[in-house]
Image 1 (cartoon, helix red, strand yellow):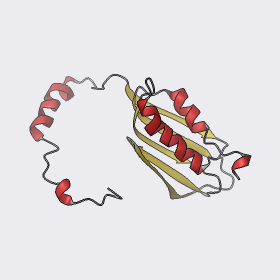
Image 2 (cartoon, helix red, strand yellow; image 1 turned 135 degrees about the horizontal axis):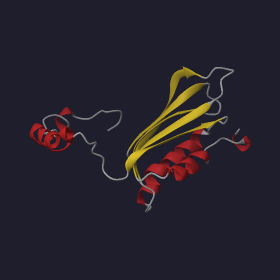
Image 3 (cartoon, one colour; image 1 turned 90 degrees about the horizontal axis):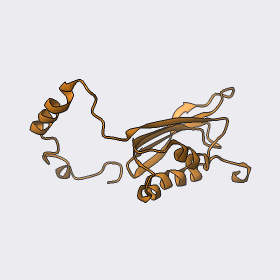
Image 4 (spheres, helix red, strand yellow; image 1 turned 135 degrees about the vertical axis):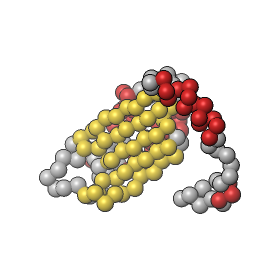
Length: 148
C-alpha cells in the first residue's frame, strides 16, 4: 500500500483475530503470573549527543539494518524502531520509525532550542539485537564537514 490506501475487502472479515485462539493463549500464558517472551526478544536503546546526522546517510544506515543485515547470521531481527534525531540543516527534530523492513523519517513540529544540546535517541525492538553493531551503523550516518 501507499499511505494505507488499500481496498477494504482486503482488510475486513479476514478472521485475523480469532477470539477462541486468543482465549486459549490467555488461559495458557497470561494467568500463570509469569511474563511470556520468546528467547532473545528485547530492546536496545542509546543516545548520541553533540552531533547532527546526514539524512541520506541515515536512510542508508536504516536500509542496511533493516534489509541487508536481515540475511546476515548473528545480526538479529529488528521488528520496530523509533528515533528522534538531529539532522544537519533542520531546526526541527526528525522522527524515524520502522516496522520490519519499512521505515520513514518525517520532520516533527518540535524545534531544537538555540541553547539546547542536540541529542538523538534511538530504540530498536526485536530478537537477538547487537547493541554495538546498531550503534556502529547509526554512527556512520553522523554528518561531517564534507557533507555540507
